Image (cartoon, rainbow, N blue to C red; front, side, top):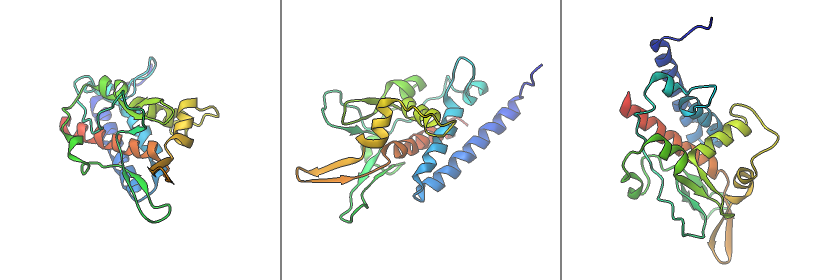
Amino acid sequence: MKYKKSDKELKDNLNQQIIFLKRSFDTFDKGNFDEGIRIATSIRVLLHDTQRQKSLLTLLGIKEDLLFYDTAISYNPNSLTRQILLVEIQLSSLPNESRYKAPLSEGVPIRYINPKIQFETWWSKNIVIKDESGNTFSRKDLILNICDKEGGAHVDLNLDNNFALLSKKNLKMFQINKNTEILISGGELVSIRQIGYEVLRSLEDKI
């Protein structure tokens, strides 16, 4: 017979995951972008249900009613250009100093006018990245690819082709004008940092 955790033990697990998130936020914000992999792993534990395993928030009975902050700029399906909707770009005149930045609570005001939304819309329906090849990605796409392929839960030799292009190529070049392009890496990981901000803020409203 398997041991069934009590509500108190599940709440302790939730508090532990929140501590993990905050610790990873601190590390990420000091410039260690690969900490985004750990952020993605905690988000997966909190939110992702499968046929065999339930997420922590589902086990606690709070996921179904939880509303989520959506800080992404609205996706424009008619635009032919790349859209990276959760992050902002901090340009610099210095070589190799331009970077993607998670706005957290300090982005442009339009990020914070959206009402909170149901989980499935926030998680798997809303597009948060469209790359230069036209591939689109939801929050779920980013989190699960990082966890299942790039070392969060395990490492896979075979990446999803669209995600491989996203992380290895399609977010890296940013065109300032017709004569100037700069290289910026880490757009998918910085997006995950912003997703982590949304998750924690949404949880804080609930608990």
